[in-house]
Amino acid sequence: MRIGITIAIAFQALRRNVMRSTLTALGIIIGVAAVIAMVGIGNGAKSQVEAQIAGLGQNIILVWPGTSNTGGLRGGWGSGSSLTRADATAIAREIPGVIGVSSEMRSGAQVVANGLNWRTQVYGEEIDYLQIRSWPLASGVMFTEQEQNRSAKVAVIGQTVAEQLFPDEDPIGKTIRLFNFTPLRVIGVLSPKGFNSFGQDQDDVVIIPITSFLSRITWQRNLASILVQADAPEHMERIQEGIHDLLAERRPGGRVDFTVRNQVEIAEAATATTRTMTLLLGAIAGVSLLVGGIGIMNIMLVSVTERTREIGIRLAIGARSRDVMLQFLTEAVVLSAFGGLLGISLGVGMSQLMSHLNGWPTLISSDSMLIAFAFSAAVGIFFGYYPARKAALLDPIDALRYE
Image 1 (tube, rainbow, N blue to C red):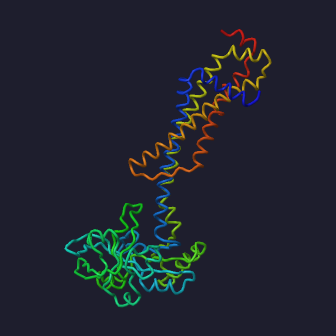
Image 2: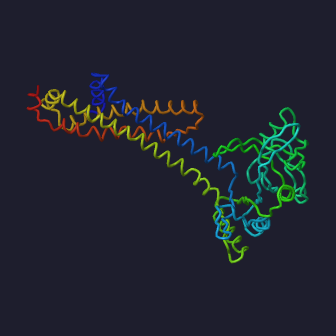
């Protein structure tokens, strides 16, 4: 029996009872739609996190303080900082392939200017910071090495700070004051970066020279972290190992009181939860497909029973068992594939609707749609095989006698 005729007969059989066919396909439709929507939302969230990690800059390695242990009291990560500017200088000088290093300090501060005030984050950084972060200026300039060396009272501010303190004027050249009344002249305004994956406004920041931070805001000598940029992705592992070995050599007894992580490791850690949730949601939605497949098997068994005399006539006039089996198997596949197509359309629509209503990012790839369609067709083959085989094994004489 030619495949074209087989498919045409399958459509005729399914049209005999449109309502029953539609309700049977509904399980597949809902299952595929749920898989498409959940995986799309999960992939969208994962891509957003990855984009925000990439917003840190290219080929980034981060050095963080380790733990502390004082009098038996053990602190968490970051509590035992022994990182210094000398460590940062040594990394820049002794590790081949390092093209940028920035010592970092951070503190919350109330900033006053223009008769207004705003609570923000003040970062102490070095001149390589904007290059490392791939963060261009919207206007003005970055502070120079000379300004950094003499602890100049200058600042580069984010868009949020500019909008809050200077809503109707250009902030370049204006003066802002920190909570300790330190005056800072604004020399640059950063381009907007938006919120990161933790909900933090990256534009709500004031950046000043690290030397100014250490001499005018805090008397602490140890750093919060060190930001390092490698010259190429393939050199990151070697540079990371070199930083670890160098810092260990600079400490008494080779004490490792720091953590070195690269951008790939940070991205993997940030997306691990999202990836797990995507797989979980996809698996839960996949149960609907199995339920839909069981529904197809049930209806096909009913169809075999209802069409027993028809099967007997076909076998009696020369149809082979494999022709009958192919006919019922085709009906099951057509039903599930049709449900898969409708489910893909519904899933794409659901994901776009949820994205519009809730602001969730969605990312639906053509691969995921092809896989969902192929899986729905496979469900039809798997759950349609038994009813088709049962129909093919009917005895023609018994089938013709069936009432």
